[in-house]
Image 1 (spheres, rainbow, N blue to C red):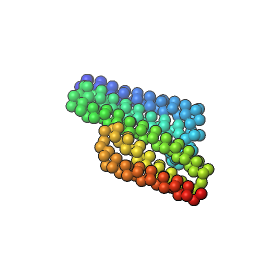
Image 2: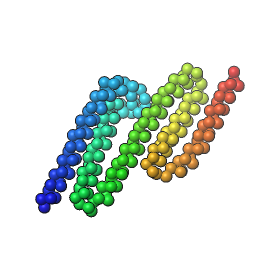
Image 3: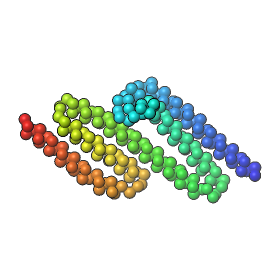
Image 4: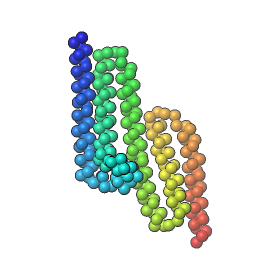
Length: 192
């Protein structure tokens, strides 16, 4: 009985420790991003505008993501600790540990990929405004769609999911976009 009580106290201590650690790291990340001027830059991209509509700055957004990841890590580690004492939950702890790693990798790839796409979109939109033409705006939308699908496909492949149907979908879209891109420039050249 005393062993169960001690193991429960350790479980709670691990969870509470990671909760406090998550809060601290989330605050530190938020402050660093505010000092670095990340919030001002982040509000100019699509993901930043969405975060602002939800009432969060860039620092709040990334600080929260890191905090939640640390909370989940604490719970998984506490369950893993209990699995050392109680062999019956060892398999569940292993599945949770692997699942958390894959989930973190998926979220990381999606976030970085979508931010890079938004930056690329800002650059392309600026170039399109300078060079003119509504057909360029349509091309930019198609490019963004293909890039979003590519990032999602890459993230799913990295977490060991079968992405063959998405690859089958992505290949004709890429070829169609390339043909459309060439056609737009041929039409623009012929108009001159």
